[in-house]
Length: 158
Length: 161
Image (cartoon, rainbow over all chains, first blue to last red; front, side, top):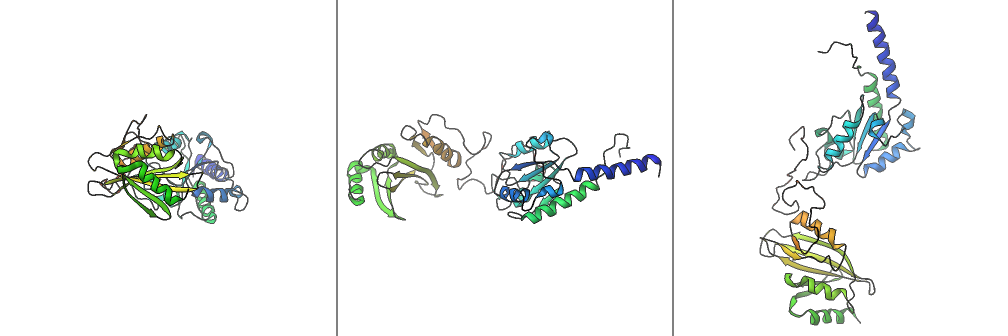
């Protein structure tokens, strides 16, 4: 291992560690799962213990997009715009059955899973998911963030 | 004045416009001819009937027949604490009804919703646009003839919708 490789590896670990404990999230809340999000975010379950306590109400300041609830075809362009406004690196959690797959709605109005519109990192099923499941999903995302490779400018692209 | 007497009075007042009077789920149901809905509602809104509140306006698609679409008006009298359902059948080919935005302002959005979901045109409506779906949406999704689960995405989707 060359010196530069060793340095970037350690830097990646440090960056991942820093990022996974400071996930600023943007809540894109459209439906009843919002109650479970509030429950997870407030003192009883407290996502601040995982460093995800800072809610940003501008996508430009957020790392994590929480899509909580049903996304309709009318709303899909808005979700795409919000995702595009976020700066890299960014992650997306599909929160609840509707965001994951359209849930109980299979009709003219509802997008059958937000992964048809934007890329998704973590899927949290449930209608609505218990806050423990949200915390589990958050920890899985932290794991992903920790082990994510950085997009170094000088690295050779395949 | 008792409710029975009042219903009798409504019959007398509206005359031939009333097709039938019945009761369902504790409320009076009045079926009128489609041409006289506006006249009937104008009369019902005033004293002595005093159905001053338009609670809801919706539509039902019965899939077949001349009276395929049925408009349902839900009225409420605050002075007497009673409700009244007023129904009328519309033609299947070209469902048209008179707008009642002049009587109740909240009829504006209710009629827009019925237009959006069922394609019922309301003559005399000031701004009959879609309310719930978007401009590019084709057809009326709550009609029984609308294809099952047919979505109309506004942006390209990654998978078949």
